[in-house]
Length: 395
Image (cartoon, rainbow, N blue to C red):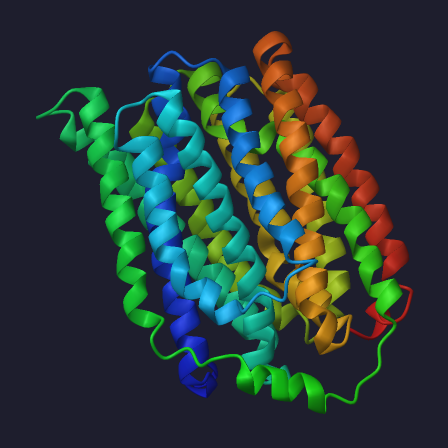
């Protein structure tokens, strides 16, 4: 493992460290934000609208990338400022919709920039043999930051309540997240401009079946529709069904992130015995039964274990998905494919999160999760068909 890390160049290491700090700061915010809004009197339906606004903002940015040639490195260097501003507007200043909605828009824009810039930059700045490890480490560092942020955020907020009221405790925790995000600027200085990247694109000789590569959008849309129905509300799942407070929810999410961290590190080694897309099919398929358990269980232990296993299996091969999508098209199409994947997923996720908030508010969690299970199953079947086509069957 150490030898692999040593082989990463300085730019890749800087990208990985930047992502760690961005993810750490955002996890301090994201774990508690739904709970914060709930404590302020927002219904699940209204929370779903705020989530949707953020996702539509991200999607609007990604749509712009179809028409404007955006510089990846320049965008990345503005990201910490935008991210921290979004956190402050939503969670630090006065909790009014006049600030929350602009904050949600800015947060969505920040997430759009992050998802737009990282996969192409990692793919272009990493040697092909090291790409599975670079994508896996990037994802794993996000998970590690999630462990620290979820665990630390929940307990830090609980500790602050010994000195402040609940609202102020939330505000200080969110401010800590914003400062952490800002600190990531220090690692962005050594990321070189895109001149070298454009040169590499011009020199690329490899021809790939680009149209087939874009078919990966279809199963991703189905996953987005399924995920939006219940994933944004899993903290409320544990709060509403089992009456857990924020520190216990934080412990569950931190444990989940730790198991995901270990499983994501194992994913590149599985590619030595099977193709990347087959690893994706295997792990996603194995996660589906645990979704059914989550939908039907009324026992905290069973639900917690199912949540941890389902989430870990479902996300185990996510870095490989990014790697597969980037390798399925020629370099000049990587930005547009990455934007298309993120945009299609975001739009489907945003639409279904609105429906998910309504279903959970009126019918509970069971129906919402069962519908998601059907969508995930169809997506897995489609990946099986894609794995038999060029260029996927050779990746």
